[in-house]
Amino acid sequence: MSENKKSSILIVDDEPIVRESLTKWFRQDGFRVEAAEHANAALKLMEKGPWDVVILDIKMPGMSGLELLKRLREIDRNAQVIMATAFASVESAVQALKDGAFDYVTKPIDPDHLSHLVSNALQQRKLEDENSILREHITEISGVNEIVGESPQMKRVTDLSLTVAQTDTTVMIRGESGTGKELIARTIHANSSRRYFPIITVNCGAVAETLLESELFGHERGAFTGAQYRRKGKFEMADGGTIFLDEIGTVSPKMQVELLRVIETKQFTRVGGNDLISSDFRIICATNKNLESAIKDGSFREDLYYRLNVFSVLIPPLRERRMDIPVLAQFFVKKYAAIMNRTVSEVSGDAMDMLIRYDWPGNVRELENVIERAMVLAQSSSIHANDLPFQNSTKLEMPKDDTLEAMERVHIESILASSKWNITRSAEILDIDRVTLYNKIAKYGLKKP
Amino acid sequence: MIAPIRIVPLLPVSSEFVSSLAHPLHSIFQTEIILDLPLDNILTAVYDDSRLQYNSTDLIRELLNRFSPSSSKIIGITSVDLFVPILTYVFGEAQLDGTAAVVSTYRLDNTIYGLDADPILFFQRSLIETVHELGHTYGLYHCKDQECAMHSSTAVEDIDLKSAMLCKNCRDQIGIGD
Image (cartoon, rainbow over all chains, first blue to last red; front, side, top):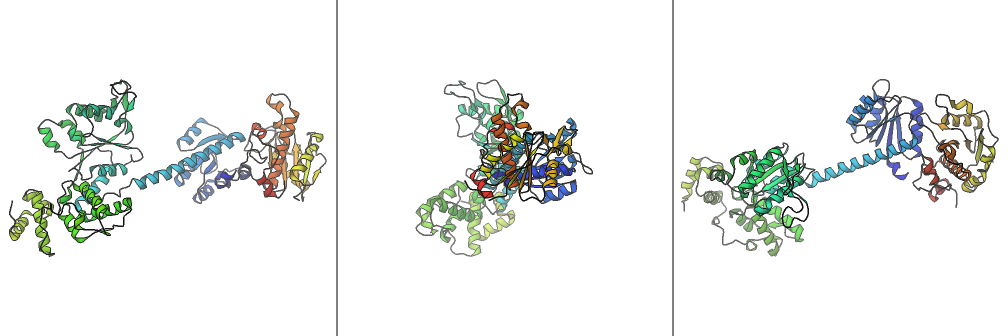
């Protein structure tokens, strides 16, 4: 058969007549066939593989078939091994299957059975190969290639995300709106062992409180007006994968109790249902709220907070990592040039100065929107200052010249403004000590507004 | 013209039955068919008393001993049950792109499955298997065309789905016309 011409079979048997007759049998089917008389020869041929199917005698002098099975699978896990023996025993059959053999047959083999067995083994091999290719493809398209930023702060965020991804720990991502909390959640999921299962996102703040329970746990048909069909909830859909609960700080006290119970038991019932449903999920949540304050004023449960805040990742706002702005701006220019099919390829010096000095209350999301808008307006291959929407709203004066001192003055002024003149915080962001900061404030004659 | 075919009845097969295959084989392979005298002492040499069957690989070897060197393809036809050691039975065996082949009519007979005898079906199956094994001696592999005689068959029901003819692709491979 033509499809068999590409398939290969390795026969391992100490009896010459078996090797000879099986080789002949499979060659007539158009297979590439080789035969080995003992384990060493088989291992050598295995290295020269790949082999789609291996027919392996269980009883051979020297290394046994079962031992050889383990060694062969170390070389190629996808080769489908069919164990053959003249002395059938339940123990050896069970052991062979436990050790990864595809099937187990007794000699002599019914030719019709052998034909189906090899056909099924080849099908299995094909599926496993396809599976490997798809997994690689998923890894490729879901890898960490979207976190853009060169600042030490963002490098730390990336490092923390990749470290925690390897565990099954619950993660709380904190950061202002627009800093990219969902991107970090997706990065953690994409680098975890759960990556072949879904990441299910729930924006807790965007779902009406009355519907959130049904959204999270699903509902049975007729559970409430409009529930015409049974529907799986997000926790059920996230089975094997990750559930990302965005804006967790907005969840009502009643739902907080429900969440706490589900997190502890990994079990729940659909709204209007009685069956207890189990789901294996990892939780990543995010908030831009100060949950510690919320605990103090009683709007967020302390026990839930500790359940969720096992590992915390803080994404700094864009104004505290201005060195990322040029890289991000360039990233978005490239992205929208491709989407819009435009030839704009850079941000001019004057426009970039403006972007760097702006405070970005909406963070990366706002920057992306600004670049997208500018890409529409740009008349040349560069984005210029007049393509930006906030020429008159920048809070800081442009430096009079390009000297390092002039740039330093503007930068310190900007950080002080963003931290409301909190000297300790500003010194931390600038990575200098407080005394140095006081000296620079004095040097540049900066005054608290 | 391709190499001639020498048909050898291996007793106790009916020589008359074997001779009835000659004409259709000539039509299919378009070559000279030589009907040899029946051999009555060859099978005892290849009998396996532990399996109560006859070893087809040994049988091919015996045929080669008697007929080599040969410029024709030799096909031994027998009514006894054939086997190769790793398999429970075979309908036949051939040297791929070689000289000799054997066919057993034993499992082609409806009566061994507890059914009524069907001489026409029996003849058709025997012809298909003879064409199949001869095809291997001309270098043909199993064919994906389900109606071609070279399609693989490991059960008698599979044989009934095939015809005794070779598909165009197989005919082209061995160089015979329509």
